Image 1: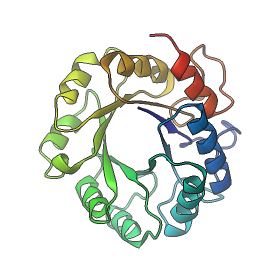
Image 2 (image 1 turned 90 degrees about the vertical axis):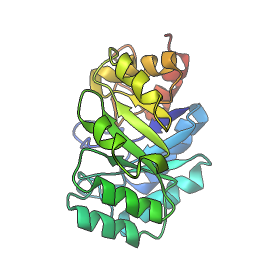
Image 3 (image 1 turned 30 degrees about the vertical axis):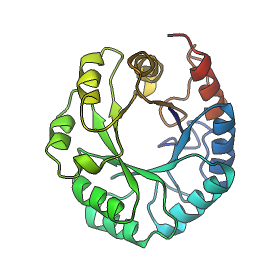
Length: 228
C-alpha cells in the first residue's frame, strides 16, 4: 500500500505547489489516487499559519477530500497542530467530520490520551515511531498498542532494516518512510521488505533523481515506476 502525504510544514515561500486549502487538498488527493495511491494523508491548515485541529479547519478539509476520493483518508494529530495535550483531546472530541485514520506522534506528551480520544470516536490510529529512539519501547508498553491500526515508522536512512524488521514482527503492520534525502531510499527499503510505504510533498519536494516535483501525484507515479 502506498500512501500519498499531500502537505506538511512547508510555507508558501518554500514550495508554491504544496496544497493548503480544502480545494487544493481535494485536487491533490484526486490526482494522487488516480496516479496509484491507495490512501491519502494531509495536515488541515487555516488560510494563514500552521496546521490546526479546529473543527472549523479539519471539517472542511476532510469533507472536500472525501468528495474527491474513495480511499482511506488520514490526518496528522500532533503537537505541531495543537501543542497542548488537553486542548488536542478537546479538539478531537469536537470534530464533526471524522478521518478514517489519525497519525499520533508517540514520543510527544499526551500521545496516550490522544490515541484514546481518537479510538473513542471510532478513528483508527497510526502510531508514529522514529527508528533509533525510545519510541518503539514506549509503544510496546502502551495499553493502546493492540488497538492501533498500524505503526508508521520513520527511518533516518535505508540502513534501518534491522529495526524495521523487528517492528514488523509486532502486533500491527508497519508503514516505513523517510523524510528529506531519506524519503526515496527508505521507500525502496519498504518495498524490499514488503511493507507499506508513503511518498508526497510532506516528506520531500523532490523526485527520485533530485529534481523538484510538481505534485504529489508526480511523486506517486515515480514511486510506482522507480526501480529497487
